[in-house]
Image 1 (spheres, rainbow, N blue to C red):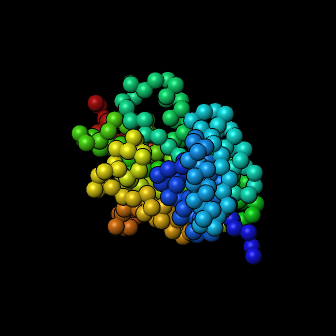
Image 2: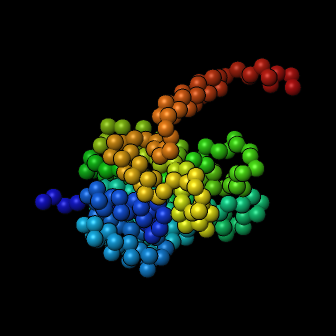
Image 3: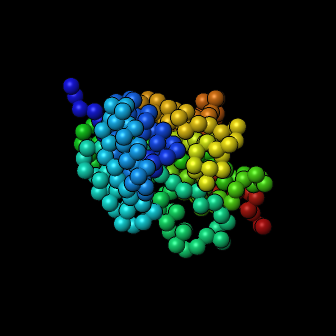
Length: 262
């Protein structure tokens, strides 16, 4: 019997990360589970063992420089065939209300960690000619132009998740023909402990299990962008067409007429 491939999941102790651990265990992966809380990780390891997966636990805080360095070292060990960069924190606040320490930690966790871990895991995947990088962003990554009372103060979070979307999409193109794929998952509001459980009792939220199932299928298919709640896949095509048009029409050497003689 061939060995099961190994998946490293960050933020694996609860919510989407825990659902991904269960889903990937049933789909043939052994797991490296990374999060801050050892007790929750050990509970998850016991749970996935009942599903047939072995699990290594790594109690690490990715918001710290030492934690990210330790996680990157593990990702670079050579045995990871699926990296799922899921860990994150809302940190919803106006930028002027974010402390310098929180700014540093939140950006490292939400934006830097997925890039650093992908950079660490990629060489072995490329050498093997197989593997997947998956990042978890948010539908809020597309909300920078939306100013509505219901929206939370989110400048730093949206900047990080938008960066994650752009990073993963660009990486996917870079990896064409290598046997390695990159997928960014953009969930809607999800009924988890996220943001102090703000969405747990709301009827218009998606389950973590549904997000995990969509993510697993998208990764297996090699999809670049997975939007679990998007019932009109052509909407993504239209979005990408608009991007290309904006790039083509704005990348010109002559000044646009609206800026003449202002």
